[in-house]
Length: 118
Ligand SMILES: [Zn+2]
Image (cartoon, rainbow, N blue to C red; front, top):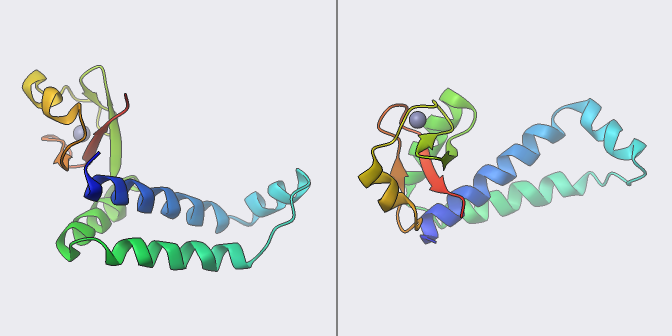
C-alpha cells in the first residue's frame, strides 16, 4: 500500500477513536464492560496523531482535514465499483488503478479519498 494512504488511514482511525472518546456515554459504556478507562490514552492518541501527521506532505494533510470537516469521513472504501462515501459509480478503469492502493486517488463525484479493501 502507498505510504501516504497508509498514514492517512491511520490518522482517520485515530480521529474516529478521539471522536468516540469525546462522547461521555462511550467512556461509561467502556467502563460498564469492565474495562478501566485510562485518561492518558487520549493524550497518547493525540501524540501519535501528530507524529503521523508530521510524516505527511502538509498539502495532503490539509486536503484530508478539509474532507474531514466537510464529510466527517475523509477516506472511504470502494465496493463493487461504488464509492461508499457518495454511492456513485467509479469508472472501471479507475477502479483498476485503485485496486492496489498504490497511490492516493479521490472520487470524481464527492472528492473523498478512496481505498480498496482486498
Ligand atoms: Zn464519492
